[in-house]
Image (tube, helix red, strand yellow):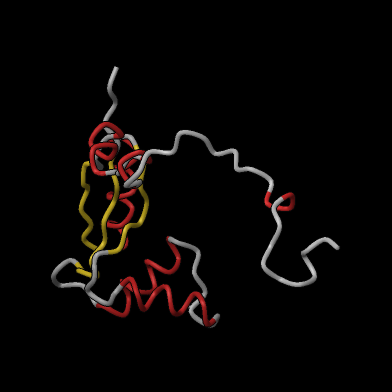
Length: 125
């Protein structure tokens, strides 16, 4: 049985007629971010940069709807996307055998220590 998984996307858009500063405060509270901490401030700044940010992935539709409702209540606009399934991802991967130009018949190599080298120290007297 195939189950679809979704991800929640936020691109920094806010609901019209809302204060952007208040939306940032609400989003910080929602995601438990403290803007006084540098790493949290950076995350919050990245969320409102206008780029596509994945808030959460690998969710069922009902869970993705809950995330979207919470972001909407905070004043943001989010989108839900269907994630590609495992069968679709596997088509894009290259197989191990296709990477090699010559097929290996054996990975066991002879012991090179038994062979004599070209150095003077390697030669027996």
